[in-house]
Length: 284
Figure 1 (cartoon, one colour):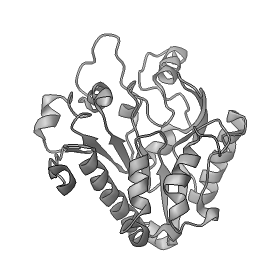
Figure 2 (cartoon, helix red, strand yellow):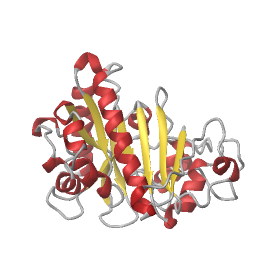
Figure 3 (cartoon, helix red, strand yellow):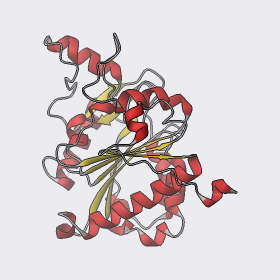
Figure 4 (cartoon, helix red, strand yellow):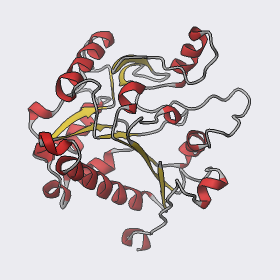
């Protein structure tokens, strides 16, 4: 795992665009992806990634990234039509996909207009058809909610899994053996469809992009040492459970989101890389 902290959002989004562009290019040109001439990307929803998508839609990234060789997926979707203001697909299309040369046949949206179980079943089948079994995404972009949720994996689902499992294990997966699943959010629109831990843990790289002081407590909880004793009544966040079995996790944070990180992470150790480089934009 790598953690990079930037002094503000301008530096954060500039670094994220560089990292995403480099990772996608490397995935197309190297590793197993070179054998099939393509790479796969899962986009995050919500408001945080929009500035990143807008950067990637412009130069130099529009020309530098091999968009025509990408397969594009989503980490989750609200159960609304694709033209709805709350649609993750709509946001990504307007901010990014309408501006880069990715073929419509390679854009695999979650069908939020369908009943959630049907949408999840169809998406799982599509993931397998494009990527195989298990579906291995080259790069998954994720955000973080103030409650520690990521994609549409919410704390309540994990709490329910623990209660239903009967063994008291906080790491129980609420969607074992599934690639996509219906989910219920605490806020509207409540009905969602999400990639599961099984899919996220099969990824080659997961990149968390987090900004804002309202996320600081969730960041600290998600990045706490696995050996640290949790506070009473506090379970690991859903984001903390994302641990690819044959891949890596990268956290890009602004200083506000990193404010509550435990001392050992803020100091930097063998598994933490801290980047405090200030951008020219922020110096101005």
